[in-house]
Image 1 (cartoon, rainbow, N blue to C red):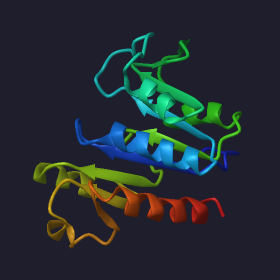
Image 2 (cartoon, rainbow, N blue to C red):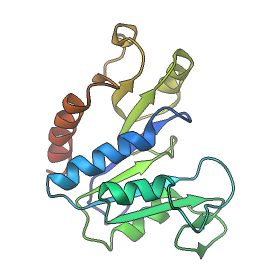
Image 3 (cartoon, rainbow, N blue to C red):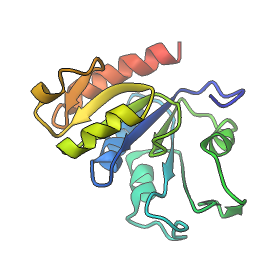
Image 4 (tube, helix red, strand yellow):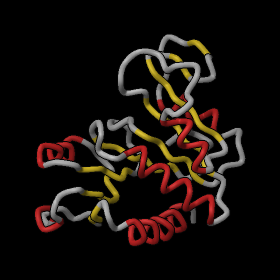
Length: 176
């Protein structure tokens, strides 16, 4: 947890093309419509530095969904063009402490310890559930029967409303 930051943080993680950005868009739109101020932070998982023009890219999609603050980090470059040898997620989130946010949604950063929604697109992705910590829910493209061995709440990729209602309660309880 970032020292001094009490804003709830929720991560969306999964392998490439699992639906992370689409889910982040849905979360941002939903919570913005509920009257919350949302910030997002994305890990640039494709390697290299993020492009200065993000038109049509994930962070642009986050903004269009209603996020009042968006950021992306890759290869030590924060989209704000602040240069540093490397950035930890904790460093990045400390910026967000200065903003009037109700929720921070982080896309990526699988190995961080914040509460996670894990996206599972195919059977090979199931190994991710054994590699990461602090999983609060699983969102799957697979038949849900295959995932009944896991103790976390499990939602189909097509159960948007159920997931969003569950998250509303989760975020409310998280922020006390």
